[in-house]
Image 1 (cartoon, rainbow, N blue to C red):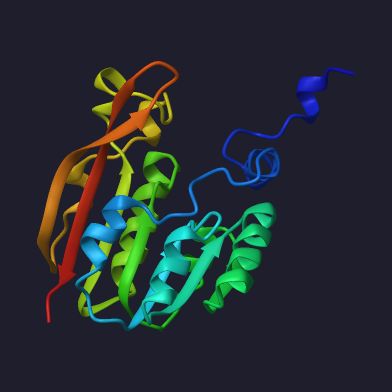
Image 2 (cartoon, helix red, strand yellow):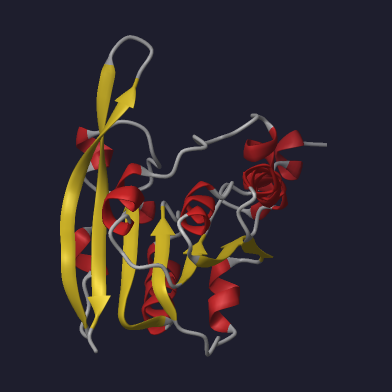
Length: 209
């Protein structure tokens, strides 16, 4: 039998489970630098972390007094997130679900902060997720997107090599929100020999009251 038949589809929950299981921590335990930059001055409230992975941003927010719901479809990632939460004493409501499916259920809850950090889905699904994330952002609340930018494909390092998985600042900005930050931001990356640069979409929008 062809072994490729049993290989998980790239980007599927099983594919991510295998990636997370292959390393003690796939990402740093520290929160993303852009999440810290954009959220440190925000007053704590209700936060939603979509595609939370191993929970580094959710746990950082919880440690700063936020009431956090964190969603991801990878069992392996959430197992690590829960363990880290137990170690730190930070409480997060962990939800194992596909982000698109979870948002499509039509939650009536509103959040003072919605974080989408490095969500890797194709264009049509990305637009649906973004619209739904905007829909659960409370008036006056922040919608923060941090993602691999399209510029990274030709000028940066790492990240997906499929342009349909890469974001742009323009696609994130939307009616009903005031931009607080819209930037293609440089992110230093340690390489085997020297530091390289990755390019990220960093957009924080504030819902109009």
